[in-house]
Image (cartoon, one colour):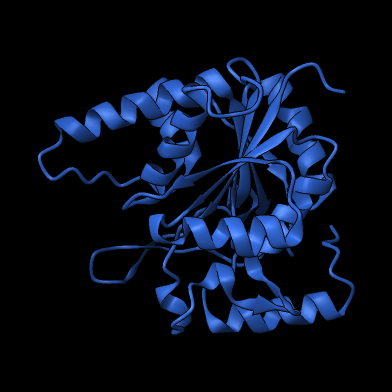
Length: 251
């Protein structure tokens, strides 16, 4: 058993509007199981993760408890938290569950693994690599070097800049941090949100919160090109094909 507790936060509070479906994407069937099942199964089977906070829409909590947790026998899910308006609100709600003693055992000085429930190809190898990295760096995110050339556009959508492809990464999840570091960073973010008139802050991932509000450097860890996020109907087709081919993400 590892010395410090590792808690997964699995985010499944999105509406899935880009899927053009009445069913929220996290409950759409992929190979006969709800999309969210795959990430939760990886967490359940992992030797790295001790427990889990699942974040879903407030209106879906009872459904999730019955149709996901009880039906599939997930034992590591210690709490179900309601999601917020933005992704960072959902993460903050889960972090408060951890901070307020909502787990079976406290995790004040362990690690938190924040993962998108819409990424079904999470593997034990990815979890192990990120666990090793966070012990050294206190903060790390999974990703892969980009395959395509990336262009930075100006306001009129003309190419303005072409960064060196060798130093550009596409970021994935899990994003993994010391519990105290990520909780402190999010507390500062939420304080700034209260002080901002509009209440809106342009934050797209957890690494940005740590970078912007603590100045701590975030280590990049190799994930997998198969660790895709299901966002559009085309992604679902790709995921079905990957599962038909064996379902294991390979580097």
